[in-house]
Length: 158
Image (cartoon, rainbow, N blue to C red; front, side, top):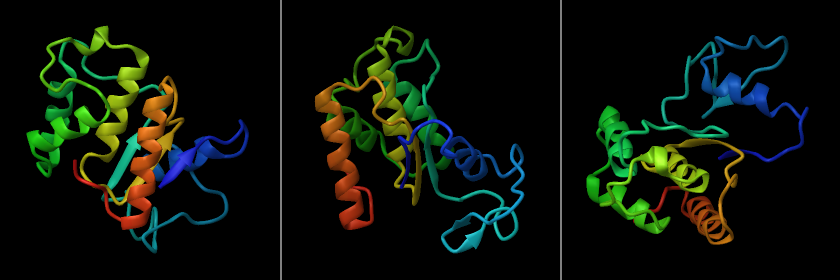
């Protein structure tokens, strides 16, 4: 898990770009970034199992939260509708709600972003400001989820 909560100027944006953009936006002058023991840019071009949460996640505004996550899940096809619903329920989002994402608060969008990043049991998580706009309860839930992941080295299924 890579989290970015460091002060400005500490290199977090550079590291994010190197990991998440196949090195096309950033060229390293010195050093190597290894993912699962493989050099990024030479042995692998992109981490195969990566979940990314950007600072301000955006989704298709006319779709519901569930519809957005469902559409994203269809890319890999590795998570069921029931698992998506369980993650949404865990973060107090209604999987059956019809409210379009454009009407979601920033905190609700952040929760969707978290779910999108973790829902397919990725090996590598890159989390940029993961607690932005979250209420205290949601921060606690997310921390517990990350602690459980660290203990088990796999994502819990809800």
